[in-house]
Amino acid sequence: MKKKIAAVIALVLLICITATGCTEANQLSYNISKEADNFNVTRKLTVLNARTDTILLELTGTFALKNNNANELEVIIETAENKYQKDYVYLNDYTMYVVEDISGASVDKYHYEINFLPEFGFKVTRDD
Image (cartoon, rainbow, N blue to C red):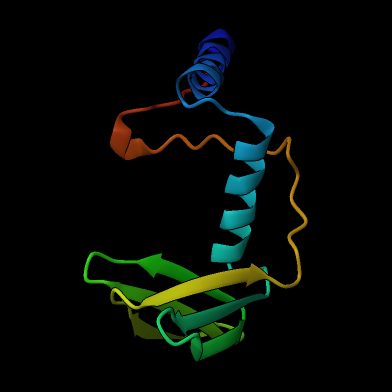
């Protein structure tokens, strides 16, 4: 059984390295984004009118961003421990946004995680 698990892990790592081009920068970028989306990084969001160079909105704090298909920026803000609010910023042809990482993220470039999810049919059993 241990050989099967080791083979699956090796296959996953091989796919990551060859198919997706996992470079050190890619892994760090993924880890930093994950930390930010988990509200562990202080960031600053600035929305600008690109025609007039006017700042329309500034937000500094711990938040997660998602750019949806409706030209909206979904902003989930952590307002207190276990308290969140969701705001939307409408984007059009004349607006742009910049997100700055204020606090920096302390991530490990060697960290990886493998999850075996039951809905994908993986079953790990122990042979005694």
